[in-house]
Length: 277
Image 1 (spheres, helix red, strand yellow):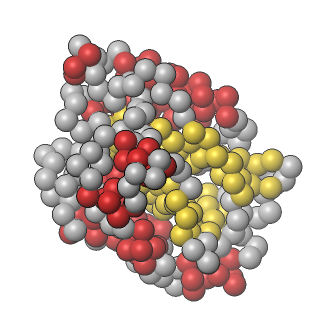
Image 2: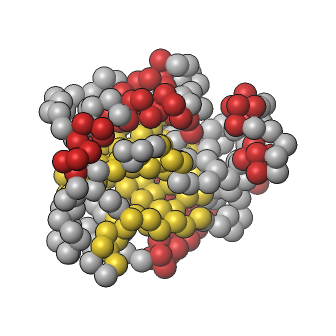
């Protein structure tokens, strides 16, 4: 989807696409995603819990309220999160079967004529920023292994194979009053944003993700290639990816680096599940 904000934002255009797959092991997909400017969201229903797919869908439905607006604020997102908490919590039939969902979202906002990403995350779904220089994880996981990394008990390599790597410490619905992390950063032309569920990062390390993101393909093809690569690497979980290209006045100098300089057919390499948009 290509979108140019009506409000003044230095001529920025956003090109975004998402892809999802149930993986090679799971029988159904508990991930949901939304590409509806200025809002982009990935929600991951908690695997092994009752109604995880319903929980993620309720999160997406809550965020749909913000679609088409040009004045979204952090309090608006807090309200949407609270609405999703209430809706997901209502699904529980007992504390043991309480469903839940992670969420990572990017909302394009404009402050003083400049475009920014307002990022929000709860759980271990992630946001990455690709610049001409590097790939950076810009969200912070709410998980047991991340707490161990922060405490210096294990390193990133050990975290990838730790037996508790799937234990999250914050989620919508399953964890009472789980707070969201907010990040505000410039939406610069020539950059690429990735939102994804842990089904992607559980199979592909950052180096592999960066290679695909720099592969010269469009947002649609890149998202599909990331998902396909995760499925081929094992696909132990549902996999979802949204890729968003920020095209601005300085895009030409970075075209070959980030993949905007080539024309790729808008086709997928894996079967597309429902977009939930």
